[in-house]
Image 1 (tube, rainbow, N blue to C red):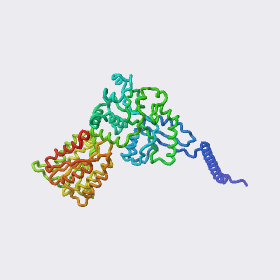
Image 2: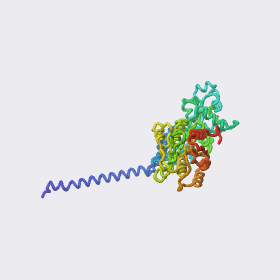
Image 3: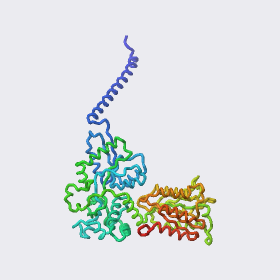
Length: 526
């Protein structure tokens, strides 16, 4: 009997589906085998990616060299050009994503990023190239001064042409220039004063700069004239830094790429792009160029103490400050000052408002209030986060300050508030600024549960770092001030205190304190 047609279709359909699935599975299996065989033929089970963020001037060379990684080495390199200031800020923020390797222009960026919060960043890296820091001149400026018939020195240029200084907090060429200036003024009768005077001259030069510090490589690329420094000026050293966030596989691959960067083929590529070897040697035709030979051998990155020192001098000469203000809002600040009809708070705020005009708009300022239990169990509360004065004014900060009122019945929680403000300022201490904590109060500590004066002084002493000065400037007004405690607190941090029993003199005391803050050594001695 013939099979029924409908039954045949019902039986054949599943068979067809199963057959198709079997064929697909066999093809997939064969594809896996094929890919495995291809990878095995290349010696790679997997390929490891290495992500590198590099200074924009070096990134093109690294990108070209990344293409030369042999396939059997089983890793690939992706290079991203990024300003070192932006990379440092990203590392300080400790974001989840980031590169495996960082190659900034200078090792000074490593110290700056570590200070900014990237505490686990290595302190040094392997230099893969170098470039002296020179003074860059246009051909017109050079010809007017009789160059480039001879290679000018820094002293020549400083004597003949205005030189502009880029912000050394954001440009390592600025740090190198400051160190060079320090060398040039070291034999003056008063080296510190001479150094400060030179900084002021450079800072006053408007853009575009007729001459300014830059790397030799960038000067060659822009076809400018280079004035070479004497010894003691650190070159750009382009440290290759494998970051802690890199996986073990990426770390191993990054180290293999570093070995490639240090071989002779890579050295030629760096030389062709205008860089020198890590030891400062010229390559190719440039080795015979008498105009580039004057550059001394690299001195390596500056010692942290030297870098901090010149940046602090720069901050003082430019009045670039970072001020954490602690303002007393205890109940006693509501007391009327005899002969004025106004409260201590009103007079203090008036003085503070006028004092803002003494600072540059770029000065950063933050404001905390303090009394007792002002924010839950805490005696202090932030009302203006740290911002530049120009940003504070634009955001209504002046109105916020002028609206501050004393806390009725509030006592003076002085010690705990000073300690908290100081700890915060220490954690956010910023290189290249005058960092300071200013305390304005009309009384003595009234919080019996506080850390106490001995405990406060011990903690302040523990928090001192000679490389990162952070003085407390104490300003006390009124008959209830304990001048001794304010003086001890300020002295423990290298600061000073200014007090008066007469609140009517708050403006005089306030301006005296600001003069102390703004007049930095060597112009003003402690």
